[in-house]
Image 1: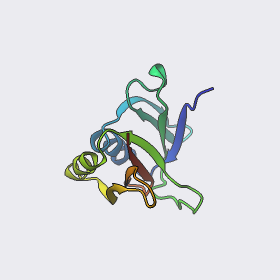
Image 2 (image 1 turned 90 degrees about the vertical axis):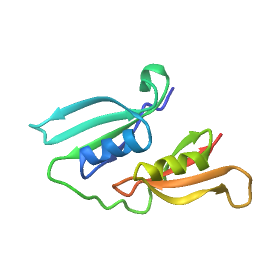
Image 3 (image 1 turned 30 degrees about the horizontal axis):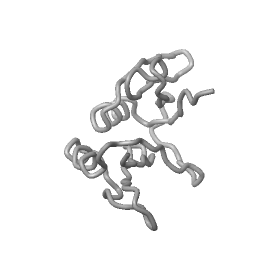
Length: 128
């Protein structure tokens, strides 16, 4: 078994694709338009996505809905990075929102940071 993708509902597809590709450096893997069903999909990820063993993020835009209540059950997506400090600088330089600067996790020595995407989803960067 393998995790294929995580789906996030977004309020603006262009804004979401730009964040995940230009700010986080993912690749736009494929898109699907379903005008009769009133939704659009974009799959983003590192490498070639599922084709090379990477999981993907499915961005779903439901036409006419520009904001969602994230609720309190969602936590975050985690991404490994070689250098969390450098990743934060790159993300900020690209216009991204770093909500927790890189540094050791409380009670440990693993270096983490958090960024927030344009729809409010949290993404943890874990230095490996």
